[in-house]
Length: 463
Image (cartoon, rainbow, N blue to C red; front, top):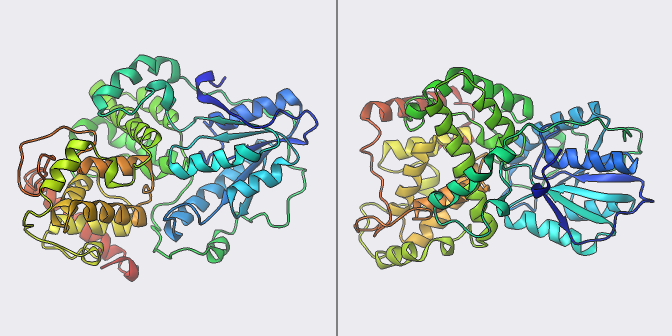
């Protein structure tokens, strides 16, 4: 059963007993399993003795979405549609405004159940629908372990504040989610003429009015691919994670962030799989710190701080110290174009940017270095913040995400403390090439260059 604290009734209309079906508006949790919102919708469909219809709105209006992101998303939706069908649930994807799509289908719905989002646009969508929806609307949190507002009713200024609040509630929420059969299938309901054929992602991509960015062809979207990568991580990398995660010379990370971003895999499923792995506890604890505490700190940040994607989201001390040093001489300054094309004097930074261009991610430790150096090499801190968001959101498969916004803000002092004052950075924590080791940096740079050579055909993705 879905924990009641995950369930948010958004003021709208009543449950309509004469509705034709229950509508599940899938947007953030793009999966057919380990999905609390979906299971809650199935529960109500069974209670009301009605079929369950799933809806997804494919829109270019999500900020900074481009063809790279849409390809990964569509690969996942194709699989999700097939899995929902096996559970007796028809899924309808429409190209257009998600809010208009929900209102269109809600005319016949008894109840609308949706998933939960922590970004500004996700919350605006749900509120916009609630204001005019003719039936009840319920949102269910399924992309965090502990519901965000339950964990802490305010913004946490560091992981130290949020960690004990999460730990106090983990035992209640770290429990398997039971799947229930749907008693009244919806596969026989008529499909609208404008429903997308998700088996033809290339055709859909060609119809989207969006920026064309080379895809990451060796990273495929979807729940099954996410689970496969998770198995590979647990069996081959988790046993050394506490030691290897900050070593960019070793590919020791799980690679879950793109799949988590698109809701193609459940963080609860990941956590439970890690907990039952037969590896030393220190490695499991280190990984769960990242998956639960750090990731849910980012959800807390975007949920409570409406300026999460701007310089104004930084703590006052960070804004003041960076502005105090805004006119300090920079050792180097680069334009956005030079940064985007990895044309700096620094081989390590260039490798990080090339990895972003080619693979849609940057190794976690190097990503911090990448962000810190953008701050150091930009004309002023505000320009640096904009540049970091632009590059990350444009190329990263896990960009435009609470984790990304929090990670970029951390490079500028968010969720951190003041350090000894120095040029350019002021009291914001600096980061040099002193760690990791020279051998590790060399191995990382060589690995990225090897990837660039391997993908030499993707000329437009390379500087």
